[in-house]
Length: 93
Length: 169
Image (cartoon, rainbow over all chains, first blue to last red; front, side, top):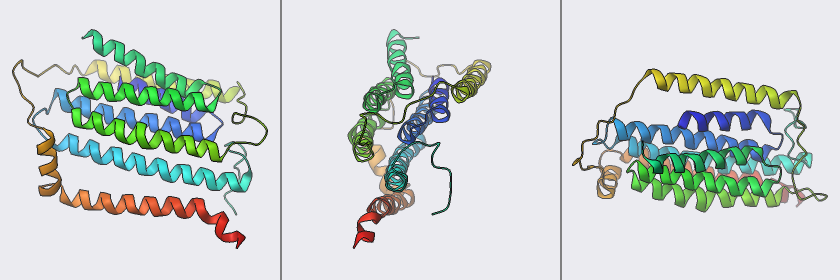
């Protein structure tokens, strides 16, 4: 289940041209990974606390990363006047 | 397995597929919200109720709204959606890679049969109180580091998005 979701996110991140949708697909991948973590916790280590703490930290890291990514997209939009990933060709400037 | 698992899985996969496929940008974010709610339902099914509540709070409450704000701020003047997608080589290559990844992951899961080791009367010892105690007892260092990281991310995001205003002065 998490594998299918991860692949959907991966396909979306590789295919789409809009930078914001690429970030959306990365969030899908993130959520799929954490779902995998919780699923393994449920079936194997149900009495331990480690996986839930890890999941909480991973969710907050994902939220922080998406905030930074979107701020970067906004800053790039100011420079290029578009959010097309094909137009963001140069690392300079 | 249960019928609830299949229904919620179907909703979640539908949400993810629509999020990466739709043309209109706002429709993509709305289906992403559906995806987040589906994942939260999975967490509740897996009896990780605190994680499910956190998922709804953080993802649907903050991240989806953040993405909507970013869409509003990067909207082109001419149209209501982003750049037009072209169904060319890139689409087939990306989908082929995603399909290969899905096949590989399904094969990996099939070869490792994870049996359900949960007995009927087993109670979870990971209540919310235990998580709270864990935060201040055993997991205090990651907790503090997470606080610093979130503050840094907040300040960083503001600085990155604010640069234009400072230059104009």
